[in-house]
Amino acid sequence: MRLLPWTGADGKPCYLSTDNPHSLLSRLADDVEAAQLASAEQVLAGCKAVLDDREAGERAVRFALVRAVESLADVLRIVVSRGGRIPEGDG
Image (cartoon, rainbow, N blue to C red; front, side):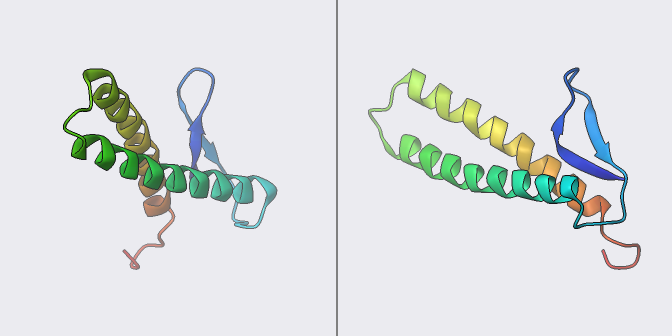
């Protein structure tokens, strides 16, 4: 079972049951993961810029932290999903 990079309407995890990594839903999940990782890189750069700016106000720091937390949650979900797909003996 593959943990998908999104949750259901109730906030619960969604899983995909397939052995075909080239299925339409598998490719969609791969694309979403790639977009989430790219977004996390941008968020990291933005957070660094805010932290380097001694004049940054509370709102800017708070916004950067909220975005960092969102991105970290996405990245951790990707790590768990990919770790779950490593065959026994390869990890």
